[in-house]
Image (cartoon, rainbow, N blue to C red; front, side, top):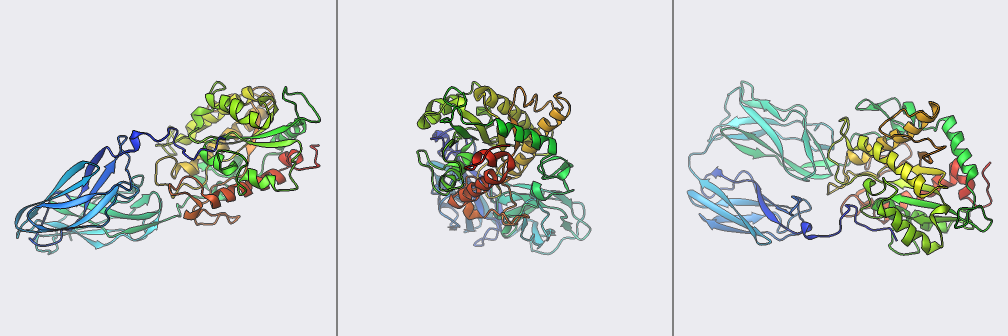
Length: 536
């Protein structure tokens, strides 16, 4: 129950089917008859929402002028794209058609002995890291039709991504002006996106454009895990799990959490203390949380997940504590931010009854959720991370309404999103959810330090004596791909499913192990989570 694999909210629909075929690059080139065009032809298969559709066969056919076409691949890749190399035939008009899923486009080229001026890559860009300036920046030279360098200043040369993930962006100064030697020297180009190969396209008015060879983008984003930031900042925002770069929970908030732990006791189905009652530890959130907590749609949970691991651990309280998976695929933050949301009814009606439990017995929650398809990153005031603070505040208050005996909530942010092949929650949004969690927890700390008066209006009232549970960090799960953080955590491509967003078995194991270690060792949870213990 509650472990769906889809994370996007809606299930499979016709929107996932091919709805169009677009020409991206390579049209209207000029070359000598019988020669290879300088730029490959590229098409993209898209669904009705404009997203690329992979694994769709594309058929290429020369339709005019003779020549040959060699497709680099016969089916669309994960971004919906297919590239083909075209050697034109005769002088004059040449055409090639591309067909996929019943849709067709036509490319044109001209065979001519008089070649137009063109661009040439004098210095090719080198491999780099996501979000970091390319170590070797490209230099573009103007050439005449015969290939002789032109000494012409003042020509604007622009750079763009030619091939690679549709979710990648090209940063830096994208247009440079040629100097007197006819060269445009770029200085700060960088690609932010999933790992893989990319090419850059350079263009200038009156010149035939040129594309680079493949640029390999590595897993390292250059972002620093919150726990390793110390005095460093991210767009001016402090790191650390708590205030001023610290990873240590403030003493006053820790004491309040211990006081809440002391209240936790086995309850019967009506919420009354009972020696035969239960303490329910419930997960709330999206598919990633569901997979890491349990992984399956039925019980028992898989052995490598958190629930599977804790069920086999003799140190865990298996008598009066019950671990329940309430998280659900597609249930983003908006599905939990009101006590009347149907997701809460699903947990009440379909999940808790499997264990003969009720909402009145839920006393601890692990919360991990976020928004699908974010589009605005920090430091914008409209960033998804800032919107999440408000949503998290609403969720915490909704949890307290649905679970009146809820005492503690432990929050986690996203795992690494740099391998993502969709827009569900790629970088930098996966990383930035950590700031949203940090800020909502700090909002509660600041409010209670301020005598209960709200300090952060984005989060709203989080008084843990009235309208909200006490909230703190659970395990922090983000690491910069293969770049180890201070405790050694990394995320490899094998730790994610093919979409680069959902954890694979090894990824679920990593999170499950960290959840188990957290609940066994944190002073505010160990006393009710472990067997034979009591909270002071």
